[in-house]
Image 1 (cartoon, rainbow, N blue to C red):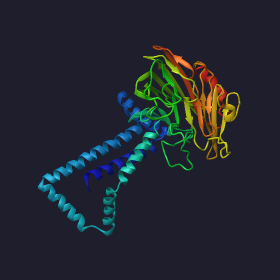
Image 2 (cartoon, rainbow, N blue to C red; image 1 turned 90 degrees about the vertical axis):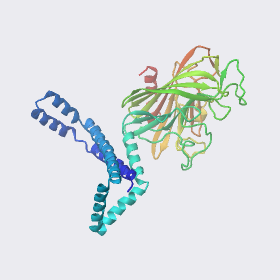
Image 3 (cartoon, rainbow, N blue to C red; image 1 turned 45 degrees about the horizontal axis):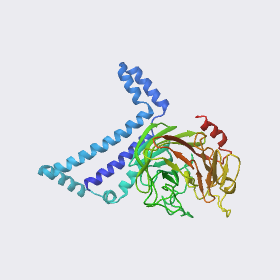
Length: 437
């Protein structure tokens, strides 16, 4: 059996051992009893402190996993060393050959079948396929945030809440966006394809995003322009559209209930010229029955006066799960509702409001997403661009100018909740938001 195969099996076994130790970590009562027994048996205070730290269940879990990994590494070195010595030493090679001959002479049908099965197992892709999911499972069940391979992963316990992709697309996006129970609230297409009855319109509407559809750098003339757009279109995609490029990502805080990520971005025109600098702060808060993302954009104009022209294409957008979409044909029970109690696309589209909510049933239970305006945003309250096909957008900035060398902060709130607008207590949540809670 190849050395690499043995090592892969060791890796899989090590993760299984670590997982088993993690699952079977001693209960607090048992560890407390063990610690108390050692307290009486050990006279040294330093040793007692050392023992107490290592009988804590959380620490014991980490030690068990670390020990398993150490065994894996040591096993790999031992296997490699033995193979090297056997190949380079005639006497050891004879011993190895004699041992193999003894095994052959004493083999039974059952032992031969078992060893053949293990050998065949090492030739299949099943070994890494077992090890990798275990590793992913262990990473997912940890309540933290990691920045890996240009991707920020946000977790709540063992449930994925969202991923903030700051590279790979023409603008940063949140995908997936899940309810507290883990149910996906936004459309998967075109990020993932093949879902049953999926819609395939508007490929630029990727889950959840922030941008503006017509940004004019005053005094410039674009070579790559779009019909009907005076400046650069950051809403749609393509050669004549702008890009929001992340140049730096930092995790400022991470604990079980609150995570803060700060992204530095550059808004690049359709001609690939930087026209805006931005510091984008994303905060994730765990609430009772909901998760809250507070997004604060600090925009500055380093070179030109920047006009955010009047357009419905912006600024904070969400494309809802197709099951929630409140289509006009009555095939869905999705509901659009704003802070004034108006319901439906006709009553909510283009109307200024403090917030707007899109909710509906998924697999028999109701979930929703609410977008909140901030009273300090320019022109607040501003209209919402909502559609029966599943689009929820807050037109947070329009017909507004940012002067050269000046800056402006804009804030939005995205609430993932169970139930509809009423059961999610959106009026109360909005008051908390505006009061800075």
